[in-house]
Amino acid sequence: MRRDLEALAATVAQRAGELMKNMRANAIRDVDTKTSAVDVVTEADCQTERLIVKLLSTARPNDAFLGEEGGVSGNPDAEITWVIDPIDGTTNYLYGIEASCVSIAATELASGDGVHWLGERESVPRKTVAAAVFNPFTDELFLATAGEGATRNGEAISVRAPESLAQALVATGFGYTEQRRAEQGAVLSKLLPQIRDIRRIGSAAFDLCLLASGRIDAYYERGIQEWDFAAGALIASEAGALIIGRAGELPGSQLLVAAHPTIAQQLRDAVTENSVG
Ligand code: LIP
Image (cartoon, rainbow, N blue to C red; front, side, top):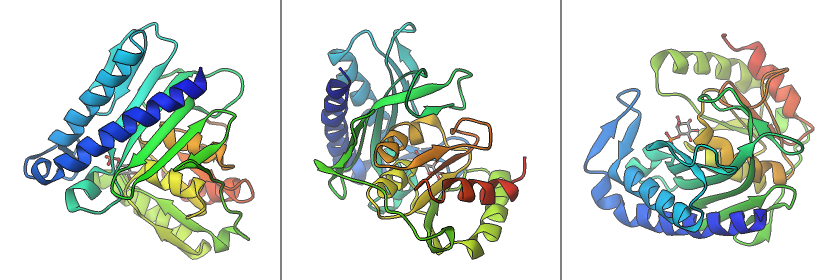
């Protein structure tokens, strides 16, 4: 069944990606904001999510859905909940930077193997069992099924092993509120001398897929939502990354660190020892 979920996610992500790409010229003329003046949402975000939910619910009417724009919908007793970010990297989408992705994750309540994570909205851990992240601007489709590896455009992918944290190219992101950004900037200023360099690409889903395909060495971020990371975290994990949170906590909205196992804990410790709260 899980391979079927991946295949469905792939088909829907590609349909949605083509829609958001084709809508861009008009969508960026009428932009709303959410949690702050720089947290933008476009009509393309909303229409793309509606298309994703329509296609998934037509194929699997007994499932549930959690989308960045539409919230919770579908069967409250569903075994599978689809966690959806219709455009991850909305600011990039607004500016025409080609790092915006459709992110679709088939998730279930966490049990047994796999990467268990905790979203901001739930007290019950979940895990992703199948995932698709599609960047229609670079035509890159990243897929994974739990326990069966990860691919980019049909080719198997794996994380690279950096010699050390000091040699690691690390991606991160920042929240939309002034206080959170000040905290994140303080953490980064102490981390930067300890690593090769930082990349702020602007899409957690794409960051995690770049990690999975060996184009960065690590990713961390605090304050991202489950729709930002649910798909990319499985893809990175299936490509060999270790996905962890603060010591003794599950990865998720509090903190998500993804890296080759040789540097993941060291990066997490470097980030948390400089963190506030
Ligand atoms: C984005 C994340 C990114 C984070 C941005 C933003 P959005 O998601 O993918 O990692 O740093 O602040 O939250 O808002 O473009 O869907």
